[in-house]
Amino acid sequence: MENKNIKTITIKIEGEEWQHALDHAFEHANSKAKIDGFRPGKAPKEVFLKKYGKESLYMEAADHALNDAYVKILQENKDLEIVAQPDVNLTNVDENGVEFVFTLTLKPEVKLGKYKNLNIKKEEVKVTDEEVEQALNQTLENYAEVSVKEGAIEQGDTAIIDFEGFKDDVAFEGGKGENYSLKIGSNTFIPGFEEQLIGLKKGDTKDVKLTFPEDYHSEELKGQPVVFKVTVNEVKGTVIPELNKEFFEDLGLEGIETKEALEKQLRENIQARKEADTENKYIDQLLEESAKDMEVDIPEVMIDEELSRMLGQYSENLKMQGLTLEQFYQFTNSDENALKEQMKPEATTRVKYRLMLEEIVKQEKIEITDERAKEEVLKLAGKYQMDEEEFLKLFGGIDMVKYDLQMRAAIEVMK
Image 1 (tube, helix red, strand yellow):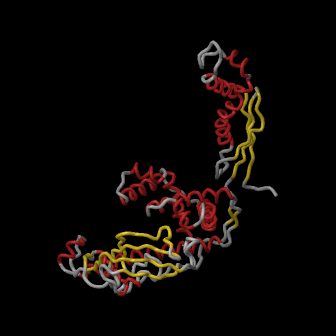
Image 2 (cartoon, rainbow, N blue to C red; image 1 turned 90 degrees about the vertical axis):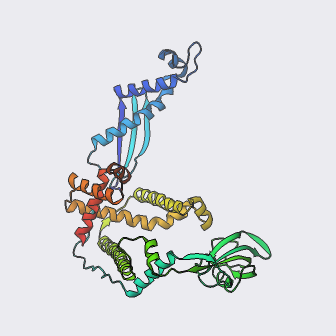
Image 3 (cartoon, helix red, strand yellow; image 1 turned 90 degrees about the horizontal axis):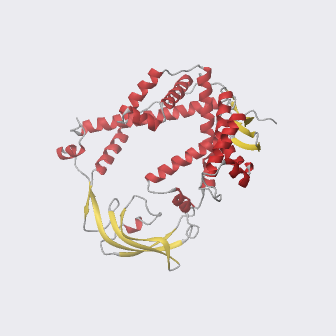
């Protein structure tokens, strides 16, 4: 069955264009040629061709002509929406010219389903007193002081420990640490470890007996009983600050000098965060509902390109945590193919939504003027404290700003 998303175009480069490509190939090849009696690059063309033959220039000339061929395709097919780099086959090359067959992947046809009046209601946002109290306690914890304490380890304390793990009386790799700072209750270690330290004091030692979880990343250790030999070097307690003048000075928030003012600010922060979350959830519901009845045959190459983008984003996120993709694969006993397979449903959904929104833009004739785009650049550059040029470079140029505004306008149509 013919694939409407694929188009093949044959392009010939001949005549003066081909001669120019052959001349270029000769100059390059001659500059490296070793011909008796001539310095590199100085041999006459007739002498070079007599030794190496005209055929020796064909492949390099074809490489040189390839870009001209692609430019010619774009010029002669301006109505085509090409969504990926083309596949190219060289089908013929001789002294008269070169012939390429380009296989182009085109933007697929999109048939929209219902995308207006979807009867999806946005959730109402409420902030409870309990949420404000929790945020206040968290703020106080953030400014808490940790200091050395006498006595036993309690929940919330930080224990400075040496430890080494053993399986069947043999130390296992990655199970050793010295002067490790462990906050009790942080659930940093495998389940049961932190709880068994409660009640120990500085100088105490203990054999902590545990079983690794069945889903642990290491095949050798998952589901296995182990013993950690632990020594407590120091115990630190957490001192929660009081809501006094000194605390508000340390907090350094303009106009926040009382508990009531801080609670009001925290309530506003929670409200803003919840509204943003609710808006995102609402948009996701709109997109999901609108995409149910749309028809589109997505080219695999578009999904592959989205996967590459997602993999790049994932790699950047890992870097911010001090990890590389290679380390991630090692820790999770996986590889790039496994990660891409895991990401593929999300990548497919993203491409589908993007094609749907682009079609809505087309149907609704949504256009963004230069003035509107420049306003957005000024606004966003100010928000991120960047100059306009720097922001545009990071964002991908004014056309990307226009595209982003079109996508947002298409979502507004759906509401």
